[in-house]
Length: 210
Image 1 (cartoon, rainbow, N blue to C red):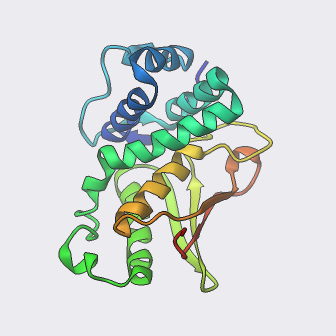
Image 2 (cartoon, rainbow, N blue to C red):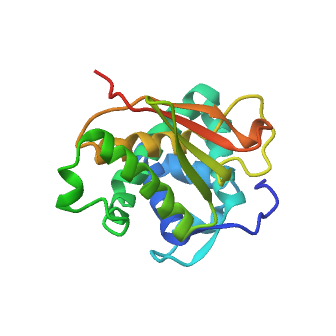
Image 3 (cartoon, rainbow, N blue to C red):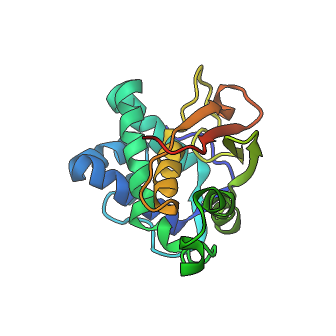
């Protein structure tokens, strides 16, 4: 059963992108099984509308993540959530880049470090502006960027013994690849509200992977 409703929301478009991404990763039958397991049967034949109305409750988004793990196990669910997160960004969230000022030519010619300094907060601002997710970004030393989730849609009311918000990790990985013009970056999940931490935290290493 889905967790108790949170009263916090993603826009329908974000939820639609997520459902489309999950179908891309696991096929239609796999998606239908996940939606049924998550108690979200209303979306089997009617995906959320393609608009920015904030109507998709965080608890329902969490239910999708729980269903992935229940169906495929922690390891399999993690891999699929990472792939789905990447697909969410590639499938539509990148179109928000222009709104955040990171899609134009002036941005593309910046040095890599400047792209990260501007681009990662811009990604966080997309979620802050269009959803009830609360994200902040700050630098830690000269080699890391920290991306935080003070209010997280992926582990609402979950009680776990490890970080579980892999969809966000995959989304950040793909977002960084887009921002940098094709480079891959290491992104670690160092804290998670679901396991009792005060906030979720992703550590982005500025040096691209070889």
